[in-house]
Image (cartoon, rainbow, N blue to C red):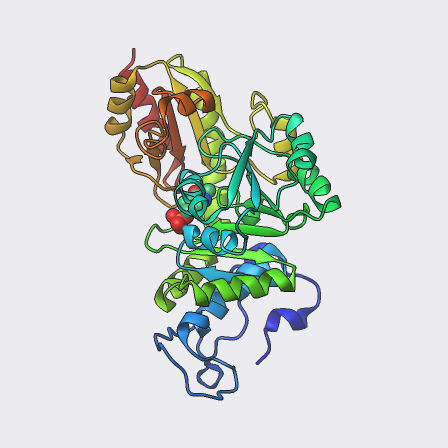
Length: 389
Ligand SMILES: *Cc1c(COP(=O)(O)O)cnc(C)c1O
């Protein structure tokens, strides 16, 4: 059975596309939900062309059909984690290649470049892509690839993706956008000109903090081939069960995000009014430094808020610990609210000088707003901040 979506012609809405996928690979049963195919291997010569699960599995295909549909692109490849997806892309480079990276990339991406791929001769050049001089750097460095993230972690810097992609495309330089924070619901990097849109499906896509996964989306058949090759040859494949969980989780992506964004907007404003807060960063607030770019390329401000408290390390930690509904934990994008102290958690391995340079001091906290009642979350934050007065 061909994917039903394709026969409809006009593209259905996003909330429809997260729920309906292509082939279930069990058409004789009339199953409403897809089965799980834990088989490691498949009979030679089967009509769907399955071979060995490291190089493809029905549950990979089902999730890939949803992800390519919501990214509105031809191809998606799923991986065992966001870091596996990053590894797959970087492994396509050659020794001596230079990657021009946004300087505020996700910590594990930086670690992969500096501790692993550096040994194999892949070089990195860093730039602040909110600074117009970074665009000149593209011509100076002539990188083999440009690596961006927007919004960045944890300061939610917004990079003008179209502007960078336009220049990169003129020079035939592939651009990777890590779209984990925004998801295709808020931002479509491929439409803005990126070659590859990557996401950790561990976060919003699955949304329930019970599976790890990653994906790379593209319109380019050559890149699709490279991603499928990396999946099987590096052993970066996910488990069929995790794909099944993520296929289930993504069905409520728009529902969850609508609620999370509404609450995050309200909580960002609440925090900004609180006298115990130095500053609040939220992409759709007017005081965000790249507010106008956020409005241009995102359909909403997302559900992550970063704030600086008028507090030292000990006080900041006490406040984080005192919250009832915001669990102090790494990760983001689940239905449950989380709070993170980047200086001692996600960015603990970053040296003090770099942290200061990036603006991550002991007073900075990052909230991942979940789906709880806004009233409870508001009270929780207000009670926590009262510790400072
Ligand atoms: C979490 C995350 C990753 C890595 O994903 P894992 O699934 O944890 O491997 C990559 N990029 C960003 C922006 C993330 O938040």
